[in-house]
Amino acid sequence: MIYRVLSAEPLFAAGVEVGPVLGLDTGSGVARLGVVSGGRVLAAIAQPVKSHGADLPAAVDELLRAAGIGIRDLSAIAVGTGPGSFTGLRVGLSYAKGIAAGARIRIVGISSLDAIALCGSGTPAARPGTKICPILDARKGEVYTSLYAVVSDALEKVTDDLVIPLDEFASRIAGEVLFVGESKAEDARVLVVRRGGRATVAGAAELWHQGSFIAALGAARVARDDVDDAATVEPLYVRAPEASVKSIALNPGEGTHGTPRGRVDPATRGS
Image (cartoon, rainbow, N blue to C red):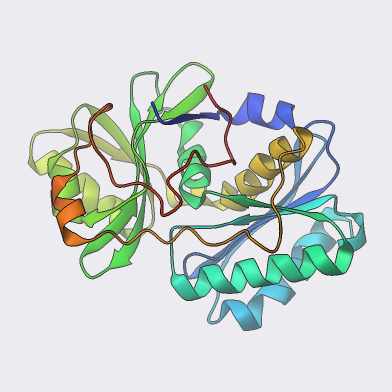
């Protein structure tokens, strides 16, 4: 096991003493935003955007109005650091840093794949023993992904973040798996089933909660006083050399390609 991510109920409980936290993820063509406070979701938005740079401020304004709060009411901002679209991640992180500086609030960088995996954790298919696989289009025939094992109160991350050809990734998955993502999730399911495996896909509606999980992961870290330095938090770009991709194995304990910083992601609780 690489690290453990609390499942929804204990995760929200971990941040129950923390005031409003804005969560945002701009790593895809959809802006996914949420606000949590006192261990509950105040508002959430997931909407396609033509340009995160142009559309993000208005989306945040809409979200905060729905939550009944203003920027100055926030205790922190949590931002998805990827992997995902290079441009989208840079825009989201720059925006978050600007909010943190202007409102003088704390900032927390959160793994986008952790939040996506949590979107599938509440579905009937997410039974103990099942693996959850968040999956994003990395272009060039590849996907960004990772594997999480479902346990009683958490998701245990069993591989680092990967970038890998979709067909190769699908061929290495054993056991029952739940894919969570956009178009590539269904493509992955089809490939696994064709090889005789067992796979399902979480409904697109589940991704509505991604921004809220970004915020909840951030609130849990704020509660532990584990926040980032705005000057040094950065996107997690995962783009492995071809040799590294070919050598990876997707079973716990075998070699995988890790994040550029090669450390346990601070958005999670250690086991």
